[in-house]
Length: 358
Image: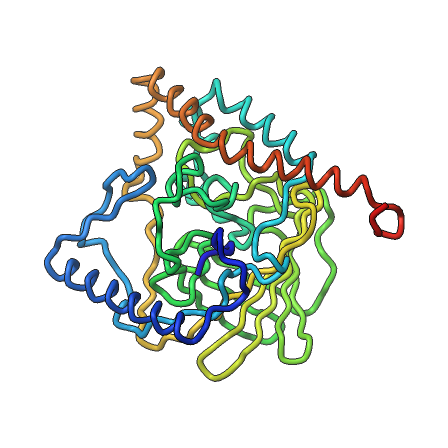
């Protein structure tokens, strides 16, 4: 299920017949993938379609029945199922980051590199695809290219799928006074105290934020503040990223058990410096007794990061060109976001104090 409602779709739910058709296509796709894995012919492609891993590294639970949601998007609020417009403050912040990136490569220093490459986990609930710029009708590999017609079963949004093959596996551990979350892709480990709603002082900021949990009936609510994100340089290769600095970001997660094998998971992103309004995402998390979690090895080799920096020093021009290329690739999507921000600002100016249009 995509994070945002696909362009041209103007309904919140698919029909039963449409869901059945999607399940049939998903099953056929899973079978084709299993056959390729068995033959050793799978070649995973990274960003910009660069091959990186073969079938030996392929893992999935594609034997499990596919779960296709009736929702047309993971975003359930706003009603249009799409990310809210950026604020003008965020537009200025992004322009500053682009200016810093254009004469600067992400491999200039370790601090400039992609946080995933550095094995640093952040608040993944707030991250969105393509440098944090969202889908916006562009392709999954570049926000500046036309949509190549990806199927709607392709995960194009926040990295949270409905099973192990389309999103990170989570292990939830409960104990008196605490709930711990272990997520296998980052790797990401988070221990949430349940005995206090008081957050750390605002000047203390963390990659994973400061999480506090409490119960509202049968729902576990986790409140996250005090978040920080990466440097001013935007990574060359698009992936999940938060578009803002995180200083005013507030994430609220809600976990509700629907039945013995299913959790309804919702999270709300509220950041008045980045988005003109909050948005809420919904996923169903399925229990799996057959999936064996393994310890994630973040780097293929301890020298990987040093080698990346050394390669950049050997070819400074190419390193800088990568930064230039990434800025150019983001430009078409940024122009769309800028127009949306200007329109939202004008609309806000037409409202009086009561919120009604003049």
